[in-house]
Length: 112
Picture 1 (cartoon, rainbow, N blue to C red):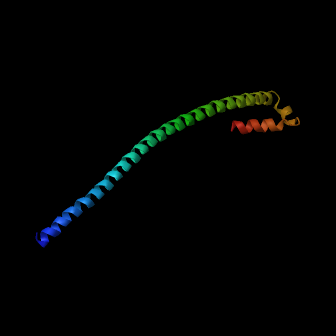
Picture 2 (cartoon, one colour):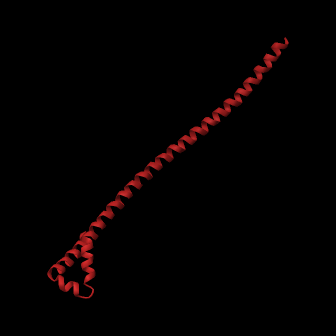
């Protein structure tokens, strides 16, 4: 065997060992990547589910607030209507009576 053949045969033995190490490392990285990708997919599903729940809850809160606000405005309108009737029936006496100025000012403020 010549020196060149001997060196070449030694390199042939070394390269496959290195190549096997690299292949094993690549396979390990592939497995880790696939595992992490699968975990991320599960998390993405969970995140999307939570986002849908948040949107649904936000819409419900807004709807509940709108109902409450309409109820409060209805009560306020009834109060304003009562004050307006009192003011129109006896506006001069309403302004003179103690404490009656405040409701009249409230009516004026609400009617703006």
